[in-house]
Image 1 (cartoon, protein in one colour):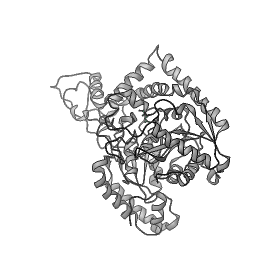
Image 2 (tube, helix red, strand yellow; image 1 turned 135 degrees about the horizontal axis):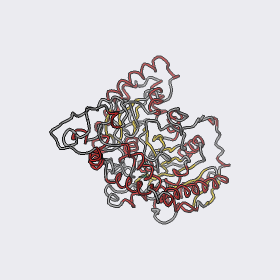
Image 3 (cartoon, protein in one colour; image 1 turned 90 degrees about the vertical axis):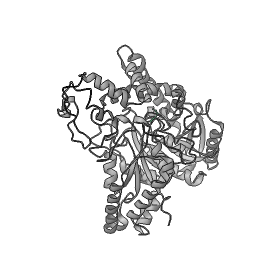
Image 4 (cartoon, helix red, strand yellow; image 1 turned 60 degrees about the vertical axis):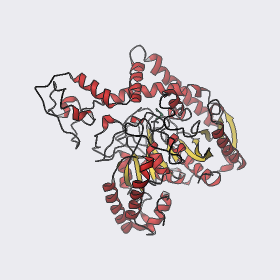
Length: 516
Ligand code: GLN
């Protein structure tokens, strides 16, 4: 039996019917990764030991509980490398965290582990979630499994590529301005960005805190529902999370009563005509099924990208101020030499760091004979060497935007525009159940095509950032192919309407999708 292209539901059935064990399933994925990842480069690190241990536990659960086991028991999955899994490396794609070993589990990981998940490894990403192609990873670029000369999207490119290359059954990603939806779209996978607050971010390495969300990347909408249902909800460790009962389990989709808005601003300049054709075809097919389609306007869309690039850089500059490269970075090993004016043999708390014991931490000794420099020199050197070009660009832009005298003109202004963007959506949802939009304006671009021009890279998110700014949920559904590459359709919903989106996506998957 072929074990590598199963969905969660299929694997669950196989496990409870004892067609295969969780250990067999896990080993088959580990073996596939070994071969496949030599060309995809989806993984930053593997966790074979943990996976095999979890598989044995899962088999025990299956033996004891039989059919009653939760859906995720024994299902192999992967985690984006900005989500903490205890005792595994967590680099966020950055050299500055190259030696960081997570001291605790993120809440989403705890929930998955409690539900019997099997973690195969950590996946590649653009450094700290800044990028659209996974080429900003400090380590290497991931390839698109549909065409190895093209990008998988980003920043959860490793997660999306691993799902598409059948290296796992599902993945966790994070989305600040499109990082789940765009790579899912580029790799022919389903990606859900939940409503802001629907999923705890405790244990997610922060990028832009008013936007960051964790969500699933899966092979089907039904699978996305299973994962989302498991990870969602209030967490006392994240005050922005909300109590969220996915109470509409018996939500009944009335296709002929649905009204869908098509924003005219999303079908203009810059949209690849071949992608547009696929999206238009899907819209036509919906209309043929009796769904009411109406053109709408979201007039402030034109400000979204600029607004997003003020807000994300500002918040990133504050969030990334904490990295000094002293304990976990590459520079850690070099610290032994020139910078010794400060007592490096002191406890980490002497530097304002938490005294959390960490396996990777070896304090360097005090060397009297060496040239003394100040702590500021240490920070400058470590941050200069530890961060990549895109991260530095954003820290500088963000620091500028937040500085006295400029705050009102940039950050505050962007926040006001953000409200206008949100109000555009509120108005549209008064008369529509969902909004459709392309996930991306183009098919996956070639590796290296946009790396020299940050603005071109930023434009890859033009259709995902307005939704992030509004804090509302959206799912990218593979809807067809243009030039042999997958095209994603975004299904956008009202806050906390994930269940409706997922049910509708599942319906579309069965009725109009041509990819699966
Ligand atoms: N590509 C966008 C950016 O670089 C979005 C990234 C994300 O969602 N993490 O900011």
